[in-house]
Image (tube, rainbow over all chains, first blue to last red; front, top):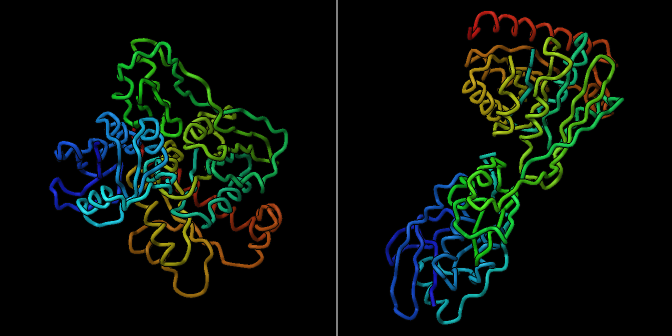
Length: 122
Length: 288
């Protein structure tokens, strides 16, 4: 199974990024191979729809589970269509959250925010 | 002659100033670009209303034709398209109707469909032609409505035209002042008012527009907005007192110029000052 988490830095001690769509990196963890990959989030620089683009990348990488502090409605729609489950992070560091998820301590994210579409842009 | 009236926040008196300036003119056009909550028409109560629907073009997918090449997904700068599980998804509220995806699609799987986002209502109120832009609730942007409102009006550009802008300094305001000959900034006498005045002050300078300030809700004593103007060397066009009577006229949705001689004279003088400034600015700062 593949897990992904938005992170501030591309190392294993990184904190979780508060934004999903505009996070600088994604940490991908494969629970079978124990392989860790850090992916640059190209959606971060988008003028708009960053959540949609980031979610597209997640689905393209065939990720099963996303761990995130929050998620906007458009991104959630893409992830849902792609069968990626969303769980809410509770810890500060990414590693603690991955461990928490693996030991069944995280629950699914249900509060999907309406997004920040066009704010400061339109 | 287009005069845009703007301010950094709502409630400073943009509508008060633009409605009364339009009413004080011999013959004028009033355009309400505050499409999210237009209220100038409440004062003018225009008659003989003609309504025009405003539509935008949305891409619609024919899933049978789409072969999943993703050219449209990669092209869209606004990320309004996603391709998930062999299906293209369009996010209408993110789409800016540029039409690029439809041009690009090698399979011609994307076609455009008109979507109504609001309307423009036009009517007359005594000496003023009133155009009101109305954006439907839930729509992402009123810019297409503002573009339509500000297309050269058939009444001719020789008439004095007053543009009541949306509050703030975002794209929707930029669209409203883009073709204005002069900008009137309305300011409140508070520190918060100065902060908001500074926002629109920076905006009109970026746009290289000639401008002046109307100090609204003026009280006895120090006026931070006035101090700001003096420090920056900004032309003060006029002052409107903070007074209960004017408040009452306004909350009864009456036009001060039409019901009270004092305000007729106050806004008449303000109009003259603005027109003098416009004439001076167009003569001395002409691009040609």
